[in-house]
Length: 159
Image (cartoon, rainbow, N blue to C red; front, side):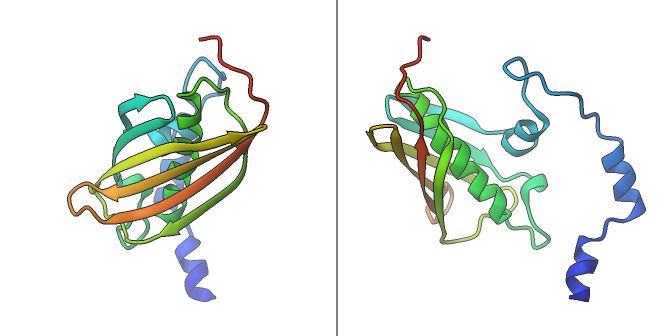
């Protein structure tokens, strides 16, 4: 327990660095939030088709754990965000997540370039299912596989 508490302690130098971060009030629809900038900065959309989204992402230091591997929470976040984004490629509005499952198959290290493939599995009523596959571009190893279910009305986007 003491080891866990020590890992969670923040030193004075790090606390000052966090206190100095410029975090402004978020204006939805006008600019990215602190969360989006922190978690998703660097993601690139390589291809988008109705029901399909292909992205690239290089693992940055801010999303790694103490061992230099991509943090599990960062992987789940990519599954959540890219799984929701592929749904909009079919013209649907964003929907809230009702279920996310992720299988972690191999680690992603700092600096690894990931390929993220997401596709819509189908729509039934207000439920949309998506499948997300994260692979290491260099080794071809599957980093994680996720399934994401979202629920809401099926209104088409006017854009």
